[in-house]
Image (cartoon, rainbow, N blue to C red; front, side, top):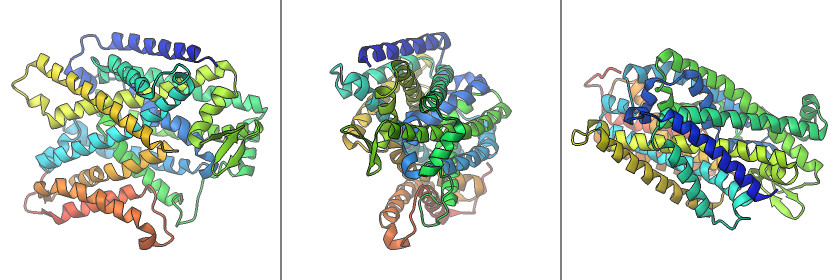
Length: 497
């Protein structure tokens, strides 16, 4: 299909985002940017967070991983459901009771200023790496299917997309993102459903027939019962719960939208609605993955080393969906795929840049306590930080381009196990104990815990034999942080939380 036609649809889609941004950012101030004036509609937040939680990585990598791991990702999703329940009934009440703008302010009041700065710093590191990994995957697909044919360099493509994101988030922040994420989630889910229906019709299969064929090839296996395997269901469910607790409940980007809702009750409804909806959506993505492999085989693809050979081209799992959509299906389907893909791209990138700007301004620069700046000065400072993070995103995406991993979802989950572990330990220690930690030791503890986790992961065969450590490394990392915090604490002074 002509790259010019695809590019035209991308530009039209962006123009629509600009219209939404213009309408929602009127009379915006710093409070609008940071927490949407605490007046966001919970249903919009819940729906829009589907797109933020899934991102382009889920859109491409989850279907692509079906051939190797079947529906094992659904085990992780069950853990997500448990994690959302913990967030709704433990973390959200805490954040609302303390009336937080940044959730890391909790660490300041509970443990000390260095704990607060450390927690915020680990969020900034983790979200920067995770968001740019997601952004890289989708930008790389757009580059391959549109911009290469137009002779546009990869770095220019990345720069243009980041500039587009800046344009519609620069003023309104969270107030705007709540609405743009809702629009983008509609487009992404519509694209997902259309893709599933189209492929079923193309293969002349009912859902039951498709499931039967997937079962015969082992594509739809959900439960893995070998305790030594990384895919063992107990490991996956536990890991999924803690991934959600940390990557959503202890993440400023995700919580920034939740605490923008007016009341705790509505925010909890948002979280529980998201939890149930995510299960169904992820299952549909996995079903799509099975269909894609059936479709690829039907078009003469041959499997070689966990990848497909289509003609003379080796198609890795992250490229299977784009290859099928853009080269083996009608032009209308290609357009739907591109719109759905960029709809998955923007929610993960725009929210991340906004949340990182908010956290750096509030937690590191202390913008809300700056008496030397009036509201106009604070706005200018916030905008400068926003631009700096866009530059950081550009550099990081180019770094991931150099690495060029085959499955970005594995990279993102690995990043999370190392960078969110200290946050898990910090918040768990603060909530479950009343001990007073040595605040000066916290930065060192939070650096040591991931290092110890890395060593254990690297030498796991020598330590555990046949037992494979998977995503539960996050729990281990958090536990190490918790234990070291406990060692360097005392019961001299009880602190209420």
